[in-house]
Length: 402
Length: 131
Image (cartoon, rainbow over all chains, first blue to last red):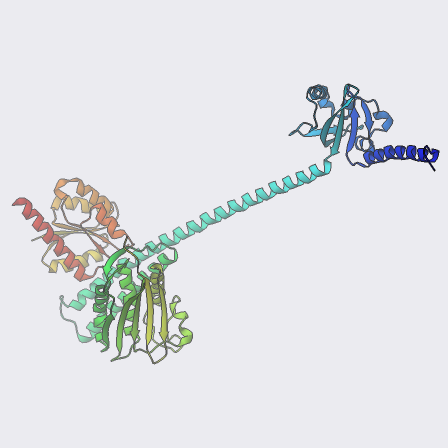
């Protein structure tokens, strides 16, 4: 079998026509509307998607001006656009950045994206337009946009609510502080005369008091001072909790500070025949709030004396290790059961509450002490067992004076 | 005899301060509000004033400001008395021109010391100026 072979030829013709049919199918299979228009804008070739998209039949579309597929409002501009394209024909998306629309036969509009390519046919410029219906994409975009706006609005509202809430909290906090300040003032005013006149009476300058009278006035004075201490501590704890207590750091002689506090507690210790010892070995200066450090030591020492029986011992240890000052306030007192250790730094907790012990303090001394130590960047912990005394261990970071 | 003006709107407080200071040998005059304090300070020329900060008609700060305007009272010892005792109150009072500061409740020993200290200090200043 040699060529020419009519059977093979017919197969080739068949193959060619098959090729064209395959291209046509390819064209018709495209979801985008594809059409070719001549220089006058008349539609020459189209795929099935054009019919579906615009609602015309193939017969209606062939030879129709492509302007009919453009919204009426845009039609006059469209012929100018075509003229402009003819001057610079290249493949490009149409109307970049514009919201393009197509118009169906029934006059309804839909959003489109259009890509244009030049096609020179025998010296005449034809244009191939590929039109994509982006109704669904637009709907999704619009939905996303609407959601975004909704969320933004909700977020803005939430923020405004939060800001309003913040302002309310600040206002409430300010009112609380003002209330505490004025309450403190109002309570101190009568205490001033209660304590003053009691002191005056104990001095017996206005005449001698009997033994009972002296004792009674002593009770008034002692309890009035206790009340004053309570007021001061409540004010302190409220300042600490609202973050308004500020340290005034300075360089000072720590060992002298210990001496001063011990001197202040000596009388209290002597009445119970308790030996006070200064075992501090830290002789350098400390950069901290001197009055607050004294308050810390005073609180711990006065507790130690309070909870140590007659004839016991109370002492202060101090030494530096690396960048840390370690201070211990120790006693041979009644001690604290281990299960109470975490609670003793809580507000209004009193050791011995459960065992029916005496309530002498305010229950605020240790919480304040802990806050003050922590404000200095230090730590406080307790080692104690019932009947074997207590040791309160403090650390202070040794800061360079600034 | 040194004269001390006690300005406090609370009568019991004035009696307490008067009792303590009279026993120290000072002559006492009293004012029950800020306006009276200012008038008595100007009319009676006390050697020292104990001035409560919160009084009707004029606050202690207002009285102080009025008095300090007059050069004759520029060096007059004026002690601020207050029950407020907030952090920074002392500094604020001293910065405003008070010579001393006592927080209520006032310990009697502090009251006596502060009054004596300021009167002596002022005495030596005056003597120095005169001599």
